Length: 459
Length: 164
Image (cartoon, rainbow over all chains, first blue to last red):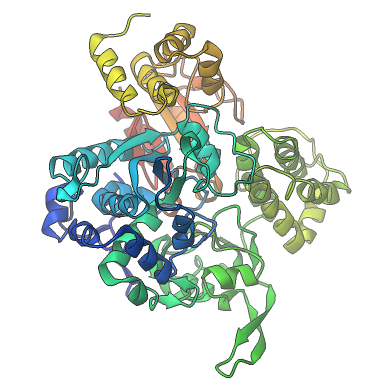
């Protein structure tokens, strides 16, 4: 039981999710081959590795895991002819709250991922690759192991792939319930058999120094699937999908208070938040109004339905035009969401209506980060827990008038003071919730209660 | 510690996945042993350390870090309910309570790092976990390795019935 089967919305452009919920589709290699599978791999072997890297650069593909870093540039950090072996890791540790796309690719279309991975390994000359899948996907791990065995039988993985002289081994590595393993250097430490403490930067990129002190490329599942498609249609053609600097499609994962939550693959920047919620997801629940949207996984800063943003757009003649827009008019792409102070992140969009208590929502998020902080850096280890304690006591009526300010100051003292981006990820929710819904926090903190802790349900 | 020959063979095969460093096999081995024994005993820690040429602390520090590794047995059927935002908005907390009620589990602790809550007969155990990555079909849960979406409280007795 993976998901209720549903047909794509007419506004969708399904490329990566082409086979998800497709009638008659199965995840075995026979079905994939019948549908033209592994043709792009054959094409890739007619190209030089540098050519593939150049196509990916030309495509403008940005990473789909959360940071949105240009994939071709990341690959470009690998210098051809180096003496150390190169490794490639597929980051399938999908754990950012609100995100649920990689699960469906792994379960329903594992060969698409493998084909993208093998092409990518050939492009960066990696002969050993791992798929780091989160521990909570036991079935996904089995499906991938089976898919790798099938690919091996067909000569797509192993020695001298399709007579190209290129050798590649791919193994599945299971995590064990730690969100921090999604951070690429924590992930690498985890594969090395250590605690997944993120590494001190610089070097900023595992492509410089990664797994076993060697150059390593870490790419998200969706990113690797896009590589296969780029080889198919070419980088220049791919760059025509979406918008400048925001190319391709993205799988938007919508959850929370909408009539039709689910996954929708859309051209990047091809839709606004309002269109997504009202046209695609059927709007808010009956009698409810939109209150807030977290646009890129729980780490992204929350946006309020009452927000007004000043947006600068470049005109054809080069002049800059300033305009004021509301939340519903914000385009869903990397640059537009950054421009309104949040981020596209992992594509997880959590919608909240006017029935939601923002202190309760933030407390739920704070509990997540308090649990998931790896404990390496003091500001994050202590601060994430304090933020949770403060929002919890607000809800239980044991807070003081100063607590809203204290909460904010704790958050302000984490971001920018930690080894990895978890520091920002855990403080951005608090900073943005308090900034946008301050009155609710002050009012809740002012309530008296017995201060007892207990179960915190949404009511 | 005695392990079945089949499991040892599987362990030896998994170690070959890591030609650069055997230490990498520590977490995969712990997964295999927990799947077999149900939890990680002290003996398992020294056994894995010896197998991979590590100090026991190198293995213990993994067991004490990763939430999925257990130092004590769970119930015969282990239930994981998602606690995070989208599931919580869709009734994840109430779902957890309903599981506890029907599985005969006394639930008086709301938090992480607690011992896994078990029914007295040891048949069921329950754990509140973080985002299981299916937020659009909330609330979600796992029973053993099986995954369930859009679970209503009414479905809980039938679900438990399937796991005897």
